[in-house]
Amino acid sequence: MRILVTGAAGFIGSHYVRSLLADEYPGHEGARVTALDKLTYAGNLANLPVGDPRLTVVTADVCDRDALAEVLPGHDAVVHFAAESHVDRSVAGAEPFFRTNVMGTQNLLDRCVEARVPRVVHVSTDEVYGSIAEGSWDEDQPLLPNSPYAASKAASDLVARSYWRTHGLDLSITRCANNYGPYQYAEKVIPRFVTSLIDGGTVPLYGDGGNVREWLHVSDHCRALHAVLAGGRAGRIYNIGGGTALTNRELTERLLELCGAGPERIRQVPDRKAHDLRYSVDDSRIREELGYRPRVDFEQGLEEVVAWYRENRDWWEPTTTANRTETETETNR
Image 1: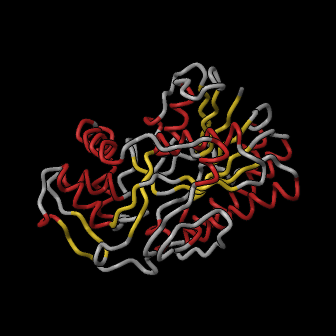
Image 2: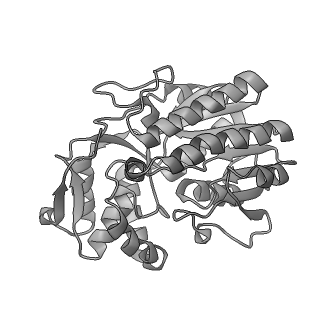
């Protein structure tokens, strides 16, 4: 089997590629993988097992029609991670988000139709639903995005759905909770806070820190995605939850404790524009239809992630100095 993974050098995409090549997904042992990535600031070839005989790396933009037309034929499936995903960057400048997330998805799916790719999974986010004061979203909730990033992902979801409906493309959509794990670019809250604390710095906390997010380990997310790839229904949307909801302040306090730091290291900063108060997904569908359950205990997973960043300074240090001066951190994604 040949699987094309877009955005494969990023945090989640690279974990999926590594897991495929490690034969962690029953029924897809021996799969050959094409890792396609534009290698923007968040893409890193060091995230991939370059040199693995089952891996082909292609440096290309999902907006490049000719590149995709050349690489797609012969693939049995596409898992589409490629996206601009940092909310604060979208607030500062939205154009790259709509170009990559919307037009890139449209271009990719056009080429999938032309190449008669048998199966596609489009990876999205719970942020497309907006904010929910109580309860949890199921997959039938309306899309009410509040940031340019979330709006671009909601638009890409609708593009993806239209290719299933119009062209009969065998495509499913996933919407996940906040991810964490090793190899996450240090613009996101957990690696940003951990690397700053390791270096003796402070951590910026938006507003009163009361915004609530649900946390999902990247390995659980990728297992869920592969379950959708293997058994999900065409035209179907699947929420992927992690089961642990924390306020940003609660998350910050856990990270301070794991890093041996005190509350004096918190720096209050003005709240983000249109900052969503709370995210929460109902993932009953994927549990009931595909048997997905998160496996990684959050407390253990968080401790392991902090340890990974302590032990892998050479991986993250080159990115953190520029990132900390270029933009404020993400405190929720």
